[in-house]
Image (cartoon, rainbow, N blue to C red; front, side, top):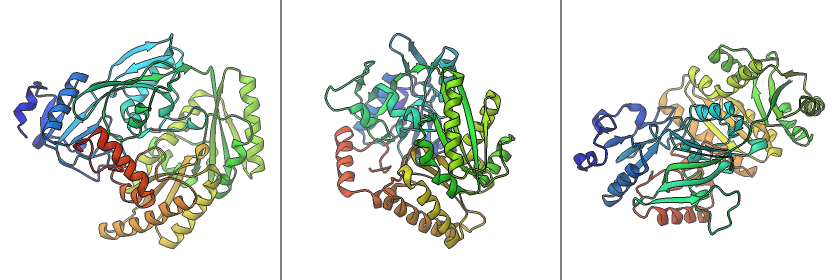
Length: 456
């Protein structure tokens, strides 16, 4: 590759970094254990710059890896040579349209900044992944879900339109500000969750809703995680309409407390379900909270607390949001985010306990009980590298096989990347993979966009 040719597209040397000067964080993901290589790192500011970069790379069959916030957990942002395009400087909120309840943003907008700005104006963007420093573009690339998915859905449900740059350097708009769209195939929805394998996202139109006037949280304590998991279906069927329903083990809660410096309510128990409720009327919300208390008490809850204070709620959710980092702070670990039907959560948790005893590998669980998305941290401890890799592969193979047996899927919201690719391909129908690869071939015939990731 002729590096000088790229300077015609991005003449600013601070936005065009040659391969030998690229910082390690731009060649990896949030975990930092897998490091790739690249010939150049580029920070575009406009769709036109992205278009010119894509056309340049496509003509020369140079791979492109897109990234932004650097919070990916599966190696999707690890480059296999070629160019790394970092979208973090395309971070403008271009429009907040109150008449259509939409916002138009660039992909590098940080989720927490975006939500904070909206809430100050009485508006709400519900998708709520645990990592608030993630960006909107990255959330779309993995179809991020988060804690409020049980009531509000996932990122896909809030994307009205996308401006994309195709692999050969064309700018296209997919979708619009309209609520409905039955106009041909939904190309927009193919892009969402594709982990940068089909196109480069340069603008996004998002659906907004009015900000709920009140939020209340509740915590239920159980004697063990099996009992807590078994109570999830009762909660969902209680007609309490929770915004979120999460489960946690005491062991991981203690790590979260230590990492955050905060205290979790009702901490002298072995397992917890935490839930939140929102709406416009205090009495109506508290009535729904009472329904969930009845449900968890009947499922064996030993204690129950209601948190109306906003700071107490924020502290509890900060502990929940930092759990992956909290586990990583004490030991290398492999995060899984499998998803099973909600009536199979207790079956999967029970299996993890059996496998933990059989393998001698420590595992801690937490996750989105309301939608069956289980986050499982498999902890390395003091194992030597080769023994750890062998043991981890054996355990993950069994866990993903069990997931499939229960009717579940490899990933609920983190994506596949390279960390889960072999397990995904082993459990997916070959016909489905063939169709996905055919779609990629139509979008990206020269296979330059994030090759070797996920299904590709």
